[in-house]
Amino acid sequence: MKTMRLTAFLVAAMFIVPFVFSQSKQVDIRKSHLVWTGKKVTGEHTGNINFKSGKLIFNGEELTGGEFFVDMTTITCTDIKDKEHNGKLVGHLKSDDFFGVANFKESHLILISVKKTGKGQYLVKGSLKIKGKTNPVEFEVVHAGGKYIGKMVVDRTVYDVRYGSRKFFDNLGDKMIYDNFELEFDVVVF
View 1 (cartoon, rainbow, N blue to C red):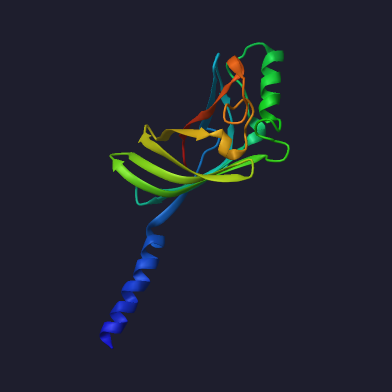
View 2: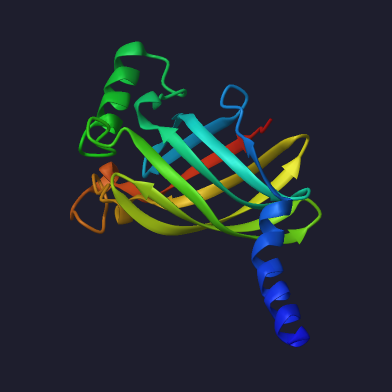
């Protein structure tokens, strides 16, 4: 009888203890940044997107998970100085050719597993939803200077963002846009 009670206690402890020591910290969206870079044969463009909300989950001081929502309506371009040309690019990025922002106003990232790889270094596996499509992602995160910093490389075509992709269109020449784009982030929590 004592063995059964001890076993029941240990099983319950396995499920309860992680919740007791886990804590969630909200992302400070005013101090956190998300920068995109898209490349094409003739160059590249870069800009910002704002976090809508987010949280990181910790066990003590160690990162164990998290969740982020990104406001796709806030896409900007920072490398084109001509206002008209800049507006055309941003409008195109928001169109159905790219991110279809009218119908898909936010993107969503869930950190499913976080593995510590060194002091303040983590390998993250997650689930990224863009344009209504969800796919796995993997990237590294470094905790430095009070920020969680990293870069994610995303294949846009698995999210039905096909414009200018060699996978779907022939004879693009110098109008071809590379399928992968980068998202660099620094996240501050409070």
